[in-house]
Image (cartoon, rainbow, N blue to C red; front, side, top):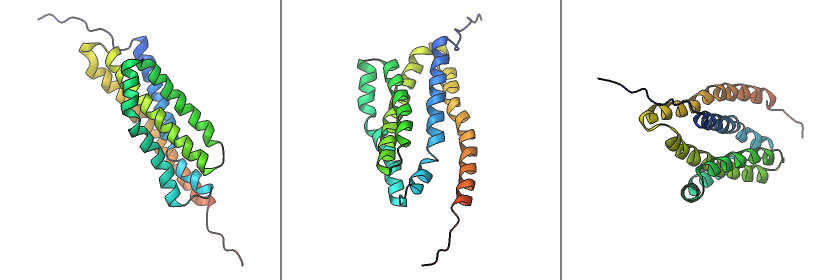
Length: 173
């Protein structure tokens, strides 16, 4: 039996796709644990924190069919880049110390998340050689896990620091 040498999975396009995936997921997993604390520091109640977090989920899920349509009709690469730009822009909105701005930023982040994942997985199917798509998917998805470990560490550190900063203060009335 003769085996043909398979095409390399690590093409320039695949490496750039993995880099985009890594940066998009890094932004997401570093910002997601901090947002509830930030909204609370801005004076938001637990209900408001839930609304801010829901704005991400709702926009991310609701917009996916439209983003998929754009990927099919326009460009998978354009959808991916647009998603990354939306995610990047959302960080700047978070710098405005208002709960409404943070909610808008999180909704914008949801739009970016939809573009990142729709465009990214579509490009993965197009760039990975047919005989090595399973390997390509494994490598692409492993980036998600590689970002979660530092994110979990940061979450624990932030939670400990936040607890120390927000000890109850007894005030005289």
